Length: 187
Image (cartoon, rainbow, N blue to C red; front, side, top):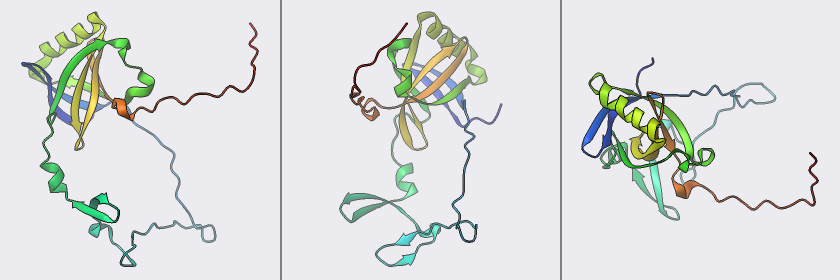
């Protein structure tokens, strides 16, 4: 198996189960380059300073948050590292819900295999068995790549899977479908 991309614990109140996460999927996108039609050569994208009227090397680009029109606060990597994430290195379980409580087409994002550390085989297998036998999933939070995510743990036989989820406010309400006249459906 490839190298784990995250190590931490599943936290169930007073019980902690040390685990590792592995990406469960991989994309194989087809990518194209933008080319100059006359020379059939790659087009370069330049970073341009609108105030100074000059090209900015990537090494001099910083991140900023716009607090009002044309007013920014510069954010350094060190600023983000010091932010407290309550779920840092923890999959903090907050609830157990029936398996059908989540509409997968809307909420599910990325998938990860969850593997127990050697010392945690027993509690890991017990958690997986309980989730299968009770037909429930665990709702939790996890910090990945400096961002806290809503996630769920569910079991497939004795293997735990973690899916990151969209937060409820990220789900757009369905637009009303306009009827296009009468439709006849035949058997």
